[in-house]
Image (cartoon, one colour):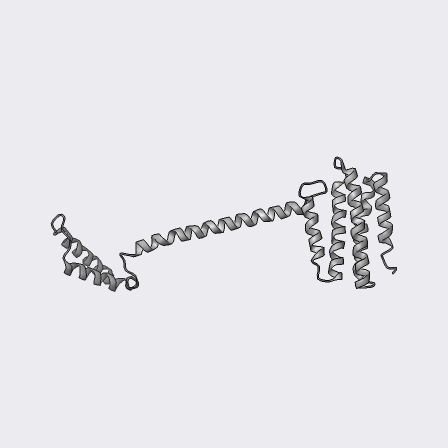
Length: 215
C-alpha cells in the first residue's frame, strides 16, 4: 500500500508541474530526465527498446502476421478442396465424370508396386472395388451395360492378381481370404441381376470357389 501511495503522489506531482507550464510550452529538460528515470526504474523492460520506435515496429509486424494468417487459410482451403475432390473421385461409379480418374489412380498404384506380391494385392483390391461398384450400380437406371462391363473388369483383375500371387507366394492364405470375401460380396447380388449378368457372376463365383483350398 505504501509503495502504491508513493507512486500516486509522484504522478500527481508531475501533473501539477505540467499545469504550471504556459500554453504551447513544453516540460523542462530536468523534468523530462527525472520522469524518464522514474519510468525506467518502475518498468525495466523499457530499457530493451526505444519507446518512440515501438509503435512503428509493431505496425510493421502486423502485415506479416496478416499475410501469415491468410496463407494458413489458403492452405487449409486448398487441402480441404483436395480432400473433397479425392473423396468424390473414390466414390465415383462407372459412367461418372470422375470415374476415369479413379481408374487411372488405381492403375498407377499397380504400376508403382515394388514387387509382385504388392502388385497382386493391389489388383485384388481393384477386384473388390469393382464388386462394390456392381452392388451400387444394380437397380440404377441404365445399369445393364455398366454392370456387365464392371463384372468383366472384376474378373480380369481377379485372374491377374491371383496368377501373380500364386507365382510369388504359392499356397498363400491371402488367396483363400480374398475368395471368401468376394463370394460373400457377389453371391447376394445374384437375385438382383438379369439373365446375362447372373451367368457372368455365376461363372466368376465358380472360378473363385476353385481357389479355396479344401479343409
